[in-house]
Length: 217
Image 1 (tube, rainbow, N blue to C red):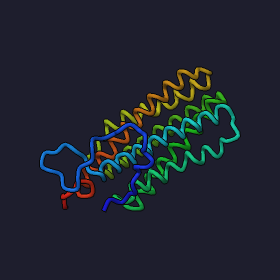
Image 2 (spheres, rainbow, N blue to C red; image 1 turned 135 degrees about the vertical axis):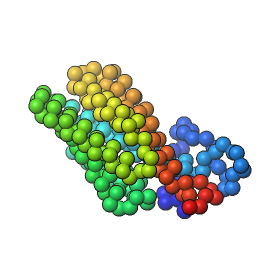
Image 3 (cartoon, rainbow, N blue to C red; image 1 turned 90 degrees about the horizontal axis):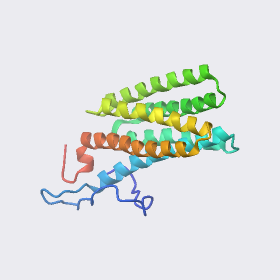
């Protein structure tokens, strides 16, 4: 049985992301995806959508010194255990905890980088950036070790671009170029969903018996 609850109600009104789900016993050759496939892929996309949306809200709060900064950063950090929980049914608690820890570090360092950039502290900004990319390599290596035939180098290219765009999103906001910051976010959002697809599709390929009706392993 598929381990996640349905997210149909949460996705109501959103553009259709996938083809029509398969019936319980699809005919040979039918071009469709199982309900489990659709729901899992949409769940991972939702987590990455939250990842970049709450990152932007945290950037706004930090840049403008808003009173909601602490609460916003706390909600951002909740994305880490949420993402870890998505891996737990497939790889176990230890892998989920490792994944969550790497994501939490990624988010924490991002906040430090924005704070250093706001303070115009070049040394601290460079230090945070160096640690951010080192964490990215650890994150990518973990996915590669954990998920069978994970597209490591394709994901690395996208994740590095994600870091560069997120920093640019903050820098343009700090400089008062709000239109440019919004354009950066639009690109960040699209790429985050593409990264989500790489992760979910690799997991689905590794566990076809969970996602495709009639397959047994």
